[in-house]
Image (tube, rainbow, N blue to C red; front, side):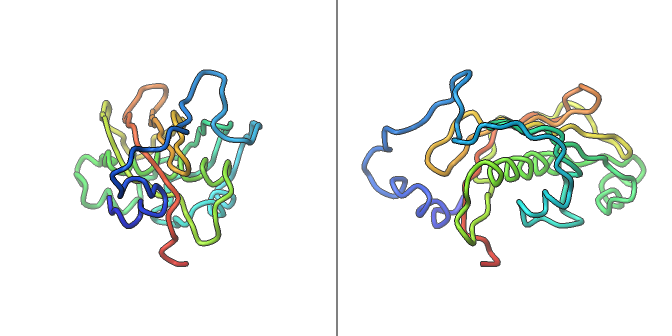
Length: 185
């Protein structure tokens, strides 16, 4: 993680003084954002308004459900994805790192929908921890991507993500996202 990205977001990281005491910890029933709503069914065009990703690297087909702190997205892994040409061509498997990317993109949509981003800023992944790959994902399968904000410190978000197929977990991870200047701004 580049400190140049974090410096404007969390200025106390570069100084020797302690972190601010205004950390908001997630408690059951306590919203982490000021918005109170439940949205359902956001299509890919609406997703594209929230994040800069485009085909072939946009990994979300739709958002099934979203609350203040959670997002449930879905995507179908098609057989014609270019990654399958080289990732075990005789036995195509979706790489785990792309499943993590699905969680990152779902988190970016959640953040973009729940807070007001400054002009020229986008949500970016800043950390990945405790990642576990439990099951192979094959072409033709539909993935459920779920992310949950567990903590928020200023404009840094700490999240848990799960990717599953038919209720069976394929990837589980913990990660952080923060807003950063867009490379196109």
